[in-house]
Structures are given as C-alpha cells and as structure tokens.
Image (cartoon, rainbow, N blue to C red):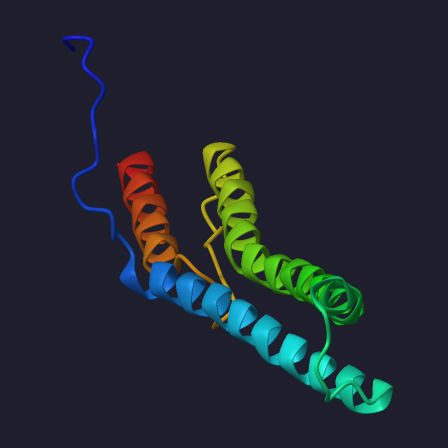
Length: 139
C-alpha cells in the first residue's frame, strides 16, 4: 500500500438495512415533535395560557413540556436503539459462535438466523463457506 487511506466510494452498501435505520431514526424524531406539540397543547389548555405571554413568561411556559418531551425522546431512543442493535448484534454474535464451531471441526453447524434479523445473505454465504470447507476436509 502507498500509505494512502482507502475511502469507500459507495455509501449505501446494504440499502435495506441502512434505509430502515434512517427511517426509524426519523420516526423517533417525528414522534418527538408530535409528543412535544401534544404536551405543549395540553399544558397550555390546563394552565389557561391562551392569552399573550411575555418573553420571560414564555420560557417558563415552554420549559415543562420541553423537558417532558426530551425525556420521552430519550426513552424512545433507548428502546429503539436496543431493538435496532439487537437485530444487528444478535446475528453477528450467532455467526461468530457458529464460525468458531466450524473451525473447531463441527461439520454439522449451520448459521440460522431469525426471519427479521439483519445479514441473512451473509449467513447464507457463511453456510456455503462451511459446506465448501467440509467438502475439502472429506477429500
């Protein structure tokens, strides 16, 4: 190598996975806006603040719904993050375990993922690789 850092030209390498992650992130943001609007409307209705409010009073009026909204967005981000990473980290963990078994000589091992997990095509390729290794071992 000439010491030059290789840059990936294609940014979208697994469109289904990448676009799904983007859609989920955008959904969390939109849900945050909707929750904020609902909480602010409810807070204004309860407090009876439909009249004009000065700048300093406006900050005190907006702050409680904004804090609740931030809390809701953080909780949503954690929940969505756990489910998203589970669909990615789980298959990686499974493939690592199955590859280790295959390297240890277990010729019956095959990678089996859940239907909605990421990396289905990679699991198929790993299974094909294990089959090819088994064929060369038996020769």
